[in-house]
Amino acid sequence: MYDFAAEPGNNELTVSEGEIITITNPDVGGGWLEGKNSQGERGLVPTDYVEIITEGAKDGISCGNSLADQAFFDSLSSSTAQTSSAAKSSNQASIANDPWSSWNVGKSGNWDNGNAVDSWAVKPESAPGQRNSASNNWEAAAAFGHPQAYQGPAAADDDDWDDDWDDPKSASPSYLGYKETEASEAGGVQRGNSRAAAMKLPLNKFPGFAKPGMEQYLLAKQLAKPKEKIPIIIGDYGPMWVYPTSTFDCVVADPKKGSKMYGLKSYIEYQLTCTNTNRSVNHRYKHFDWLYERLLVKFGLAIPIPSLPDKQVTGRFEEEFIKMRMERLQAWMTRMCRHPVVSESEVFQQFLNFRDEKEWKTGKRKAEKDETVGVMIFSTMEPEAPDLDMVEIEQKCDAVGRFTKAMDDGVKELLTVGQEHWKRCTGPLPKEYQKIGKALQSLALVFSTSGYQGESDLNGAITEAGKTYEEIASLVADQPKKDLHFLMETNHEYKGFLGCFPDIIAAHKGAIERVKESDKLVATSKITPQDKQNMVKRVSTMAYALQAEMNHFHSNRIYDYNSVIRLYLEQQAQFYETIAQKLRQALSRFPVM
Image (cartoon, rainbow, N blue to C red):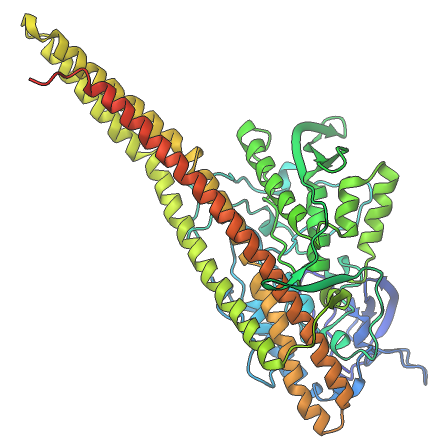
């Protein structure tokens, strides 16, 4: 009954409304089945888009069943074909350079949110991985269309973690510091493009995620009661997550080089120790990548999950790189530990606290079969407050969009300025001080050849002044590592967070638009007034979740920027005091005459 546009490289099959295809494998898993069309082409099709024809000799498929009222979808069938062609052409067009350029949902009536989802920048930090869909199940694309999306290899799952992600052919060289070779991307710090070179992970790699759509969440007669509950309370500053009574952090340390296959493959393994248990577990980078994927699949529409520091192959065992990546993995884990929802989730706790290989594999499989993912994460949330008015919901959503867009611009500007300052401090500026120092010492050497007996003190003083400027040159070159580095890293982290918001906002605005359209469907008796009330209630839950997340974001932002700018100013003051002290010491050798 619905059109489905296959995405190249994902082994999917394009089907049209009314088309009959042959099922070749009805149980691929993850909400997908394999089919063959009349041209003999095989591929994957979402199970919700099809139904088995039981009458006659034809065992094909034409439309799908879902939890939502099927009459609701009748109103969408006319726009689906248009959406399909638009999505297909959009997938072939070049992607805009600004992920915020079209985060707003289209006008009322345009249920496809492809423009809001697919106009993502090709950013240095990772591959875009846009997903165009001809269906209205657009939130699956929204969750993984942003630059933070997981871009792992399109390969079968391997419980033994025996793959070639650490093979030197799997990625290209990069450097995670701030150097002249980096592309600025409006101030962004360039990161490795290993994800950009990797094949996009098929959606059926995310078990259960292809199934729950926005309609299923908004129009389900009764949502399944998940075991996990995420309460939202009203605090001093509005809706907020419930914070655990005791917090913990995770220390990433002791990187060790390991190998397998008789030394043909090598990797770095890190030791993780939770401060609340003092138990240690070991993980490779690919394990962190797996955790990131699971968190993104589960929470990505409600909580910004920033990407990991990218993998690097060339020079990946050099001390400087190992230190930088461990530092960024530490920062990422600290962020996750500080989030009251993520830190308490079963998948995160399993990652930190498994006791043996068997328990790890069991927990891994369980996490990959989790069906409370995507938009269905909102079904676990219980606001302890009355439902919000739709006008208020839309206003708050717009306010979040405006702020995060403005902050994204501000963060990029500071990264640009900081990167330029870093280059000056480690390049031309020290050289200028060195030139002054050498010139003064050369002058003293010339003076010493005069043969005049009364100028030895002056010559010595000038020589020492020259050496002072050479010392200042070294101080200037080393200073960015002591202060600017931390300011840049904090901005880099927040750049990653802010890159997640356009799709989060797009999901919320898409839900709001669907509630607006519900009036027409009620008027034509395609849904009941009770259905509309359920939609409003569930969109209100989404709005409370967005506000709770923003309050958490603001609280962390205030703490982080207060801390890092305070550190920066303290180090800058100490830096200039050291220079002033050296200059005064040099000055003391010149008497007043």
